[in-house]
Amino acid sequence: MLALMQRTRVETVHLTVDPVTGLRAIIAVHAGRPLPAIGGCRYLAYPDDESALTDAIRLAETMTYKAALAGLPFNGGKAVILRGPHVEDRAKLFEAFGRFVDSLQGRYITAVDSGTSTADMDCVAQATKYVTSTTAAGDPSAHTALGVFAGIRSTAMARLGSDNLEGLRVAIQGLGHVGYSLAEHLYAAGAELLVCDTDAGKVQLAVEQFNARPIAGDALPTTPCDIFAPCANGGLLSPKTVAQLRCAAVAGSANAQLTSLEVADQLESRGILYAPDYVINAGGLIQVALQYQSVDLTAIAPHLSRIGARLTDIYSQAQATHRSPARVAQEIAERLVYGGEG
Ligand code: NAD
Image (cartoon, rainbow, N blue to C red; front, side):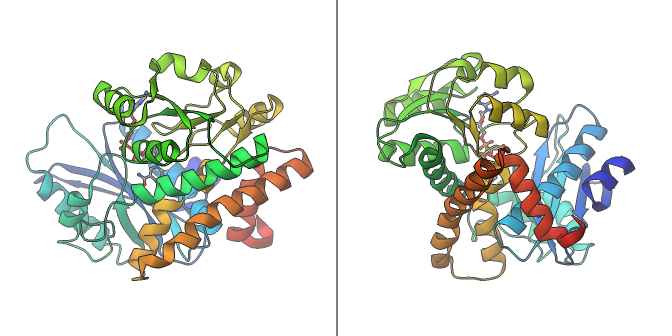
């Protein structure tokens, strides 16, 4: 684990166990820049403690890159609460997590993430001020979706020569908070939607509301489309999946989509344009960061549209240097975070 911390430059990993509420939690803080770390709190079941630690550490590094590329004055952090088979009192569990966050005295600011809600953050806020995305602050997913939508336009422009989405076939994997909202924007822009979700109810709703075509989960990566938008779990883009893809570009919200950077090279050599996940999905982080800084959210629109401009810049640098956009994004992020020593 220490080797992984060294490799990712994660400075500290904090652990807690609370026998009263059953809380078992991890907070990873990245060493990147001398700024408070911000990042969501996951509440998920993991196969073992090591997987949870690995997830927190890897995502803390990504959050630093995401904040740096989005021009936010924050460092990266990530929290994980290990979900057991049963929780006695969810509100008390999140309040205990709030005390854990508070014990770091502002070095880490928490927010919603997979498995947590704004109501959970209200409980966290009972014990600490270092929290955002409470009910009053609002769920950031709609802003993530808007950022991904802007990113899909830039991706279509770069790969297909036009940002007019009318008639474009977009395959969305995962119709959750982000995926469903993204589907709404794409439908309004005239895109043709192919959708899949493990929750049949969400698929049915998308069929009714957006005239979407349902695709069986396994078949989605091999279904011909213009843009494939992964909006469910990370780790989807493995050598095996990428070999099967039949799309012109991959642009979706899921975190940690690539199983390795080499997979990005494979996408590149197949002529599939890849939108680096921590660039295209930064809308939610932008929302929580502005909210935490008490910036009026009417100022958010230019920040979100800059996601599209940033991707356009990354794509042109990638094209000029014959590299994958993922490698270019990483290089830019490392330069921003570590300066010359990247
Ligand atoms: P969510 O939990 O609301 O939605 C995920 C959806 O994917 C659910 O509907 C679920 O049923 C579906 N799903 C799960 N496994 C699936 C599978 N194998 N095939 C098809 N569907 C599957 O999550 P979300 O908040 O919408 O986030 C989606 C992704 O975007 C996650 O990877 C998350 O880390 C990332 N992300 C989210 C935000 C945000 O603001 N919510 C910000 C940045 C990144």
